[in-house]
Length: 172
Image (cartoon, rainbow, N blue to C red; front, top):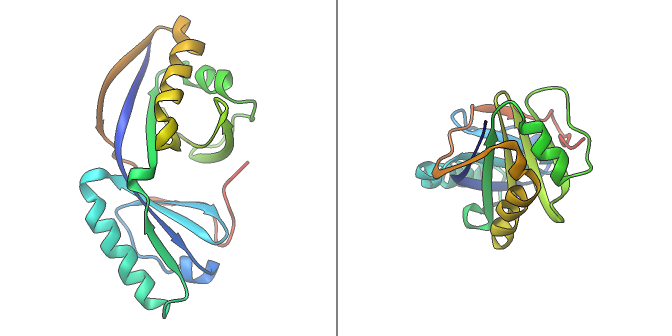
């Protein structure tokens, strides 16, 4: 049985030199290295202001040579958990499924740009908010035969840590 649910998530994008990004102090958030010059701070939506404050402190430490932007409202997040979660991804994208966990991939997802975080026990799909409904519809259309169970949206609680090495993106 596959469980699918929307997630209430906070995302703050930090842009700057790789060495400046390495100094971000957000120990209770997931840090996703999107590109060598970009890290996302990700946590549950209830921690939005906390992430904004952490990013503002980091920005101040760069003497203005960086940018921190709250992108919480710009992204829709859908989580798929269950034994056949890789089958769902395979029906939405032609990208290879990473074997390591956690892993992040970026690219076309159900025909729209997206990011996918492969974690132990769950796969998290990030798409621009205006097409979030499209992703959910495509999951229903392409994977309905897998026994989907749609659950109410809930707070996203990622495992804190850093995904992506110094100055490198984690795309595959």
